[in-house]
Length: 289
View 1 (cartoon, rainbow, N blue to C red):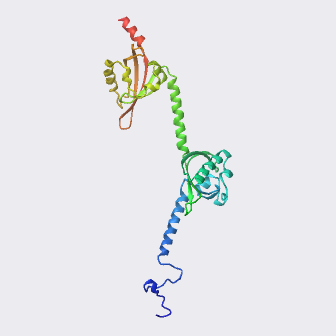
View 2 (view 1 turned 90 degrees about the vertical axis):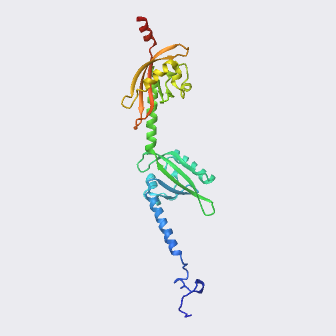
View 3 (view 1 turned 120 degrees about the horizontal axis):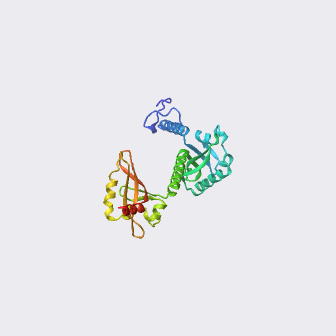
């Protein structure tokens, strides 16, 4: 064999690598790893969610651009070695750090914690859904944590607006002397106001989940069904009168206005009803006859 022939018998007579340190097949693997790393960095850098890494002392070692913006920082160097105590008010920082202590020292992930936060770039109070998980080395030892936070401010505002709307509605309804109830198409009560419950001598919880027809004399129920059958998407409002059974077992008269609620497909979802006792009027009419 020529002294200049670089064929290696250990490789089956194939030419040996030009560099003695090279290993066949490694270059494609390194390229794939580099491409995957670049892809991951690109995704993290452009996500609207905040992503960050902390060491065992809860010091920042990495923050993606979204998190830098939240913390009012321009570059990664602005936050290296800092903790939440360095940037957030004490009441917020102490809560964040307490959670991280559990994550890193007990190894217990924190998933979807809804928590208040301040955008330190704009000064706005916001809400985040935060997940924090332990970061481990090859031996399974915890070396820090990875955190991910998503802004849920709009959702929280919508929930609060709905809560206030329901509270106002309930305050109005409960303040009425009229009997107010809601029921499903099968007549199951889903809501009754205090006036309705008092009228029948029950607590609201005793009435919910049962049919309002049990409060009506049997010979009146078919007539009520006929009235309810008139409700349609084009005719969602009806009024009618029927007898009812009072707590003392006497029979009284009520006047009802029903408003049906349909979905977009025209399916009946629920009926809201407002009623009042008209027994005295009925008795007066009978006396005149």
